[in-house]
Image (cartoon, rainbow, N blue to C red; front, side):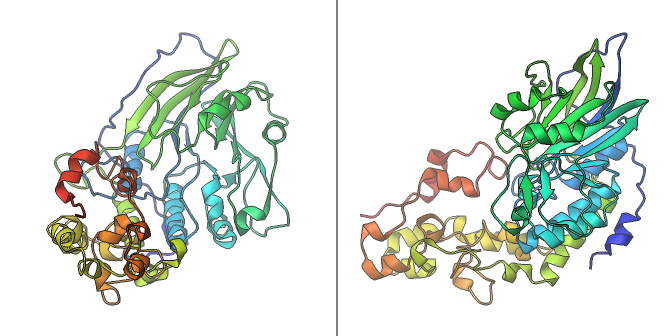
Length: 458
């Protein structure tokens, strides 16, 4: 079982000797400069504690991130933008707890709260931040009623290398749900003014902003003017090769899924904000030895989380939580084969039919944890997991193992009753991207892949 929060928070950082790998643009530091601070920036983890591993060479993972931070400590301030998880399920709660403890262990000083973090149950959000050494930052969220142990502040101010830095965070929007309903959303202009009240002119001002690039111009022109905007958005998958300035204010994007870090030096030169260093750190694994470029303590915490997911029965708890279209029911591919014999035989010979078997073979060999109990993996290796009448586990729903007919064509109960083409939910090439995304299947080509499973009704 996972150690207690207090035990994990007391872990000390271990030394590491590997040299970090950097990619990106670089601007030479001027001979004379005014206030400056060295930053490492991350954000938009999306619950990806580590890469899924469906394809080789995937980037990211907290174990690699922490290894990198320990290997190269040439920074003054660690900033996490937020959106640590991507939902409010029981699995997201477990992920959030684990991620927050790892960030604490790495001594992150500034953590923003993003819209997807507000999908967590309020008690869990408050409780886990209450044991964190770092108070979360949210400048534009105001509790409508007193919330005991709520540690969030409108800003955090630090002194690094004789330079003062003030960090604010603009959540910008709220999802639907009880947690978000507990807060009022303050307009950006008012929220920024409140967060910057009493800020010295020489202090470097940083804003974490949860918004798309087209909204950044408005934030860049707030008063007092920010020195740096950190954009946290799913619309920018990867960091840009160069910082994107708007009206003289540099803007950076750490990308999604925690695949990369930004290594940035912010300065103010002749009164103007400048990035004198900008590097994109690609969080790669070792090409020769598995796990060699991962922090061992972090890796152990993630493995403990994976085992907890099994022990707590989260696979079953998350099954059948969402409604299907028109209350349709999953029936299993074998039932489809009663009429569609030729298509069924083609499917039986495909890799789709063996998707669950692939997980079983990987468990304990390629992956030293119970992968067949982890919801993120199950959803792309079964029919209907998470939906009413969908996959639960091998004992209760063996007929829904693998990626079957209904993964593409939808639950088949209505089609069985009506036996008409119109009763089938038609699939589109874009539906494949639910599982075959840019990480799981790089350079996915539907026309090429279709040849492996091609079937038509005569």
